[in-house]
Image 1: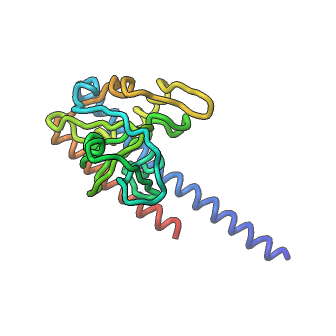
Image 2: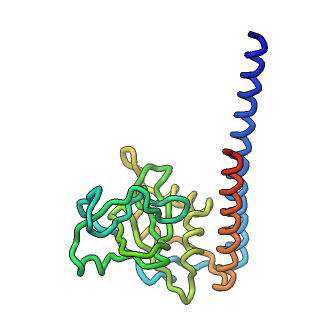
Image 3: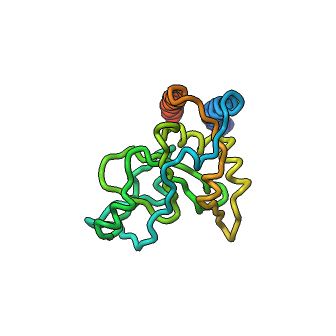
Length: 220
């Protein structure tokens, strides 16, 4: 009996160590995120976000279907790991003219304007091929490519500093919080040259992939 209890204690210890390792792994990316945008904010002049956007637009407020031949529509739950994901996608029936106004294009950034206080402000980039649109709880941000890289914008909005700022300005209601398009577009964004923006994106993409692999190894 004592031997069995000893083995269970060892198992519990291993579980505890694994959980700690996973938390420390996640912290690596957050720390890198924070450091990069801290340096950028000190080194480069900031601009008001709306000055470097070509479009800011609320999504569709339409009835959605579980299945169908209609257009695929993204909801706030489809923002996964900084990207728009097709998991549990729904469909919306609209005419071609309306779809043309809300059709997503590569590089569009979708901002979650209404959610729980912990998740409001979550942001993902659209980098899929096909016909997709987006629901009303999301705001489309289209970067001006002459000044702003879409992937850099996506990382900026998801950075710890920006997320903290968004939590501060979010208006709380019963079980949810709200941030409107005007508030998002009024954020200040540090603006390195486009070449430097792309280097930052490449570094964070690479680091994120390494951490995903490390997490998978830890789980295995």
